[in-house]
Each structure stands twice: as structure tokens, then as C-alpha cells.
Image: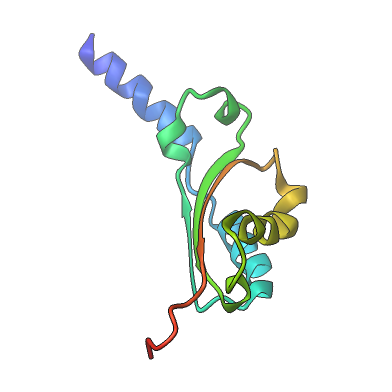
Length: 108
């Protein structure tokens, strides 16, 4: 019984695989912000069975450090990112977690 449950779980995980083409598309679009650091993580596997994942939409986490965020509140930073990705939501991106910040001055 436990083996059957385990294999069913693995089958579900294979339905939610990392999408390197979509990651590349996100990185390409976010390059418009001239980031000094950009990490795009596909977290879809964490949402197996979630309603948004059943149709193949993906969950991402983006860590981005860009000079254009300097002196802007977090909501303005997030708007800059969402403006570049708006047409990808809610499909193929179901959820997007953002961590945005400006570079720290004096660190070279």
C-alpha cells in the first residue's frame, strides 16, 4: 500500500517539472531591469496537487537586485517586475514570489 502511494506521488511530481524555457523567458524579460543579481527558481514541485498547478501553471520565486529599485518602496519595485511579466499570469505563471532590492552602496 505504501509503495503504491509513493509511486502515485512520484507520478504527480513528474507532471510538475521544472520548465527551463519559461525560466529563460523570465530571465530574458527581467534583464530589462539591468539586474546585478537575478535568480529565478521554479517552485512548482512544492505545489503538487494545488488547484493552480493542475492545469500546468507554474510557481516561481524571483530574487532580483537592480539599481532601478534604488529609493523606491517595495510595492514600486514589485510593479516594475510585474509590468514585465503581466501577460504570463495567470498562465503559464500561476504564482510569483518576489524578493527585490537595490544594490548596497559601497560594496564592490
